[in-house]
Each structure stands twice: as C-alpha cells, then as structure tokens.
Length: 170
Image (tube, rainbow, N blue to C red; front, side, top):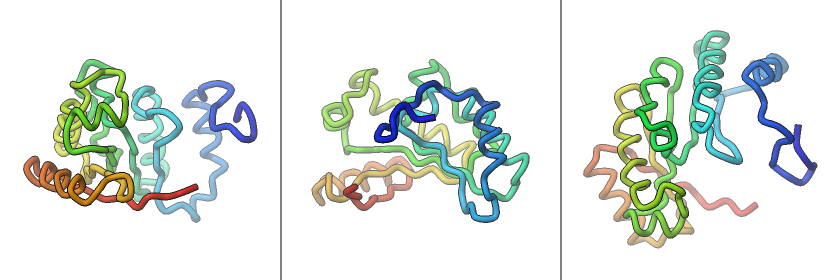
C-alpha cells in the first residue's frame, strides 16, 4: 500500500508472504517477465528477493526473471551474493552509470564511497558464474558519445555486456 497516491514510498515494507499473496492475484497468462526493481535497491532485502525468485520459478518455471540493481549488494551484505541467484534468476541488469569510479561517485553519490564502482563491476563478474544474462546499462542522453564508448571498452575488456538504454522522460 502506497503512503500517498502521488508517492512511490510504501507505508511499510511488505513481507514475503504479503508479496506472495499479491502475486496470486496476477494474471500470469499476460505476464512476459517478472522484474525485481524498485524505488530502492532490491538486494537490500536479499532473503526476501531470493525467496520471491524461488516462488516465481516454482510456480511458473518457464517465466523469465530479471533483477534491476545498482550492483552494490555485496558491499551491503559483506559477501558474494550472486550464488543465491543460481537457477532462479535469468537476467541481472546492473546500472553502470559511468566509465570510471570518480564519475560514478559524482553521479550516484554511492554511500560506500569510491570503492563502490569496482565492487559493482566485481559483482557483475561474480554473477556471470550463476546467472545466464548479466548486462550493465547506461543511459544514452545522460552520457556523451565519448563516455558511452569508454563504457563499451570497459565492458569489452572485462567480458561484460553493455546495453545503452534510451532516456525516458516521464
């Protein structure tokens, strides 16, 4: 339940059981993919996220699943978390945002500081072992062509996939 009609803030964090009850009302024949993202970082509630991924795959084995993340979950939990996704997550989309740590920190103001950038890239590399599709993203209109090219080169050097997302003005 939303705090206000015009707000994305929730009155309270839903439990896994509450989320499952809501998912029982979903018209599954109309769903093409289940995406875990949000106003906040899904991996902050890693145990709930993983429980929900298992729930979806147990009930709808062929349903594609995706996680949109800032990639800082390993810093938050102090451990590698990507193994948790083995067999239940099809795609991880990680916000790359910039071609180097300084630009990344200036843009994101990541609470873990300058080391956040390398930690995010390490998470992407760890995830490749357990998740079939690992994609890093940047937004086209936010980044000039030279920055996009540097991001492409960085991803190529590390064997990662880059997707340049179109800017959506809402």
